Length: 167
Image 1 (cartoon, rainbow, N blue to C red):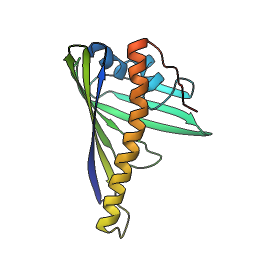
Image 2: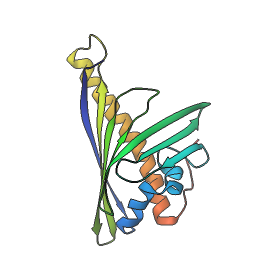
Image 3: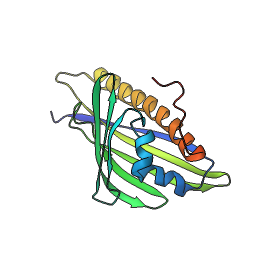
């Protein structure tokens, strides 16, 4: 299937820690297995080779199923920017690009997160179908990242995640 559309999801979060601490939480294998696409108690695999051209993989076990996310690092500029790909091969062969940008603030740092979401089209889709799919992908991704970023904030600011409200 060659037809697709893209939509950008952009989110900003503030942290009461220096940018280096948030930057490291995106790349440190022990930290990512606690919050990135997984919870420590459901994480089965967390592999990370944080260098340009290096790859990462996370397998999370939820509701009796394994969910696998993989990607490759495109740019790493400590502690300002990380650009990498994000794929979930069991659902789609499309690849999203994630951009994490960090800047100093008076109380810590601000993270701007952008996900360029690739939405494959199904055969015979109308423009309305495409627009509906773009909104669903955007809103679903935003919901997932909101949950992950709550865990990220707790992890970098307190050193642990309480997992309250999770199943």
